[in-house]
Length: 113
Length: 113
Image (tube, rainbow over all chains, first blue to last red; front, side, top):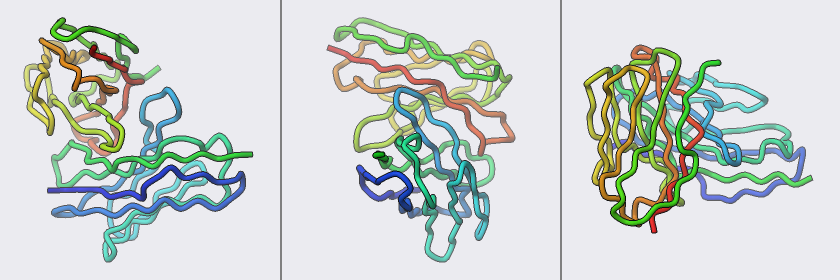
């Protein structure tokens, strides 16, 4: 079955540090890939997405590139802020007509001033 | 404002006492879904619905029921809750042809004693 593997957290960074959260996947067909963010006490919000190989999703300074050859979708940000502290989930949907998101286990990021 | 709402946000109950968690969306979405989030496991789908009167099991449906009598509502029913159903529950929805853009509710934290 489909699966998503994220780097284990928690990750603690100082403000303005560079962030990478690794995500790799296993899927049949050609999945669409997502990063969701969950701020403390809130539901999940779509952060960015990519629907085909070599697409780059970007939002709020975060970026991720769909790498089919390495089955990866790593999340990056050049300079994190305290307000980026949250749990980040990598996810995928496979196939036309599929609605079920398959999530990774989540990576908790804490940014300290 | 487009949103998915859940009630209650927090609930503490005892084993065996039937409960319902409501989910409502105001975006005229066909697809609705329930997930549970547990530490170290990420989000797992419980049930989903493609439209009114159409529901199907997700990955972890045991101990849960759902109904979809109206397009906007998708309640989650625990007929006889048990402590292993203590979790954080999320409802999500999307348009039928926009599975890659799902909206999540704020979550319901359930504790079963």
